[in-house]
Structure formats: structure tokens, C-alpha cells
Length: 436
Ligand code: UDX
Image 1 (cartoon, rainbow, N blue to C red):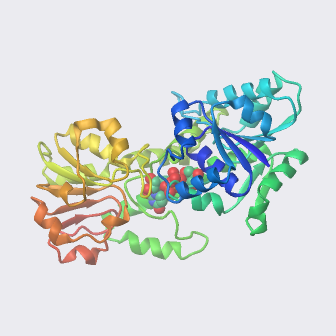
Image 2: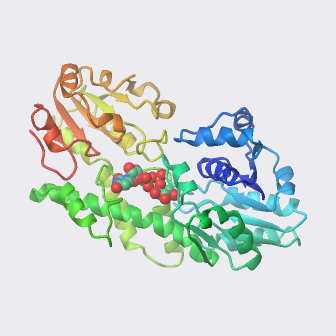
Image 3: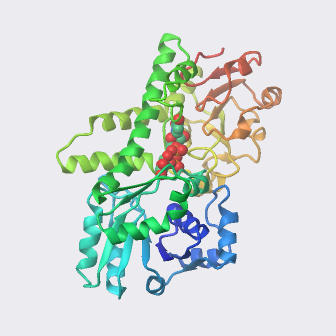
């Protein structure tokens, strides 16, 4: 099948590449001329394990194309995926202007039946709004389908090639048939397609992300309480997760969830609720707890230094909002760094993958180390903000040699307590006893 993807951000690019890998001919459209030119030359604009290989293979096989010309791509394709940004507007609700703008252009240009597939995370009712926008400018028949994306950054290729499920929201038989055909390689391997109406499909995405945000936040609260009563959250987590109604995943406490999805989607769902006079009390609490969790270690560091962080040298390991990505959107590391800087501390950070993106925001307000040990030079303490696997088994002797003072504040529970116990380090993690 010939497919157009509008928007080559994270979701668009991965979806386009995946659909090409499944055998379709895919035209990826973006307004950013430089980006399109780079992709035509085989340059992948994001860091994502395994993506480059699949991207290059499909370009070479002439199944994956990049263009700035929406009209041309549109004429060649029966199915048009919208993978456009829906950033939070000033009031936190999703801004649909990119989606609706492109919908109108599609309406104006199409000359025969098309299926418009919404991949962007959009509020309930957007399929209707897209339909109205297109109908206002054309009489040509079309269907609008909601097909939310559940891929995780860092595992985008794995998740998109092997999703837990595919959700298709559409009540049109014709559109359902076309979508079934596109996803047949998945159904052949036992991955279910769940058909539903557009609104339920749109809400499924927000509900799934918000639920996971609540799950993490619940564990963060349990972890904070563990510290009060002397329990160990790792044990509690294992005990709870063994019940398969709960499951082990997304029970890891830390310094709060971040990224481009959870914070935005939780806010947007709260906001959508308010429009219907509905209060998502649980989600409001989740937001507040998460905000607090993001900077919980700053207070710990401050207490450790008796309230005075002036000129303290603090090393930070990890800047990305989580491991295996260069994405720093809503990253807890940045909240921590900003607060520490405000309190007069100096920061020396190490993150080989996310450094470039942080430089664009923080510039020379902090120093950037070229490896994890040199970040520790003369440091008064270390803060671990991202769970990169290279931090898992450090040489504590080498660390001690570099640092002025042996103290670790670990926002990701990277080490087993026994690992640190005999090293002489002060070690504060989340929801476990502090080693002094
Ligand atoms: C998320 C959803 O998982 C994905 O299905 C959706 O399509 C987009 O949003 P992503 O933002 O890539 O994906 O990251 P995810 O792995 O879900 O992590 C989100 C945040 O939660 C990160 O800051 C991560 O560090 C944090 N997290 C995750 C925890 O603090 N504890 C956990 O147990 C899991």
C-alpha cells in the first residue's frame, strides 16, 4: 500500500520507517526543508537504538521517501497518517492547530477517497473536529481513523515492530478493512488489533499514559514513606509486583517521571476533564506529587551541606529524561540542575548522548565532562539523574580518587546497598536506608 506520513518527529519517523519495513511504500512529509534534505541523504534526525539501520535499509529498497511536497505525496497515497505535534497550549490543553491546519490542506488537495489516520495524541473528539475541518473544504469521500501510538523512546523500534496491541478507532467498515490490511503482518504474528469507536480510541491513549504516570507516582510515595518507617522500597516493589494483577513494570521509584508524553498527557487529560466540568482528582494529585519528587534530592543535598550550597561542586551523571534517549524534555535532571545553580552550586555533568541537547538550553552555565569519572573531579557530591547502564557498576575507588568528598545522591537506585556499603561513600537513594 502507498502511505503518506505528515510530520517526521519521533512518532512520524518511527511509524513511517516501520510501515516501510512492513512492505509499504511510504512518503514522509515535513515542512522543515533542511531536515528533509538530511533525511534524503540518509541522516536520521533522532537518536534511537536500531532505527538508523532500518531507516537506511528501507531508503535503499525504495520503500521510504522524504519530501516537503504534501500534495504530491497525497496524490500517490490512499492512507495519510497525521503525526503532528500537539503541544500543550498556555492553559495545558493540547494545541490542535498543526493537526487542523494539515487536515484542511489535505481536504483542499484530495481528489479521491482517503483514510486520514490520527497518530498524534489528541483529546477526545478530535477525530470529529478533523472530519468537520476536511468536510468544510471538500465533497470527496474520506474517513478519519484514530490509531494512537504507544511506543517508548529508547525502545521505539522494538515497540513499533512488536506492539502489545494496535488500537483502531473507526466505525467505517471500509476504513477498518484498510487498516486491517496495513497491520496484517502484526495480526499474522498474534498481535491483536482492537477496533473501537474514535472517541474510546482517543481516550485509551490518555488513559494508558496517565495510568502509568499514576503507577510510578504511587511507588514514589511508597518510597518516600519507606524512608520514614525504615522499610526498603526494592523489597516492597518485588513483593507487590509478583502479584500479576500489579506486575513488575513501571514500579521503579525515582526522581519523578518526565519526557515528552506523561507530563503533557496528564495535564491535557486534567484540562479536558475541566471542560466537561469533571475533576480528575487522582491526576491532579499525581501532578503535584511528581513535581515534588523531581527535586526531592535537592533538599537532601542541601541538608547534607547544612543548607549552604554556595560554590559546592556537584557532579551530575545523566541528563536525558531516561536512559537510551537523547531527549531532555521535562527531564528531572534539568529541574535539579536549575535549583542547584540557583543555590550557588557549580555543576559538572556527564551524558554522552544528551549533552548536545542540554548545551542548547543551559549553554555554559554548567560544565560538560567527557567521561563519567572526569565529571567527578574535585566534586563535593555526585547526583545520579538518569539510569544509563554505564553507571551501574562503577569503580568506587576511582570515584573516590576524583572526588573531594565521598557522597552520592542517587535518583535512580542504580546500586544495590551491599555494593556501596564497604566503599566508605555516603549513599542516599530513593526509598531505601541511607548509608552513612
Ligand atoms: C511513554 C509511554 O510509556 C509510551 O507508551 C507512550 O507512547 C509515550 O510515553 P516514554 O515517554 O518514551 O513513553 O518513556 P517511559 O519509558 O514510559 O518513561 C516515562 C518516564 O517515567 C521517564 O521519566 C522514566 O524515567 C519514568 N519512569 C518509568 C519511572 O520513574 N519509573 C518507572 O518504573 C518507569
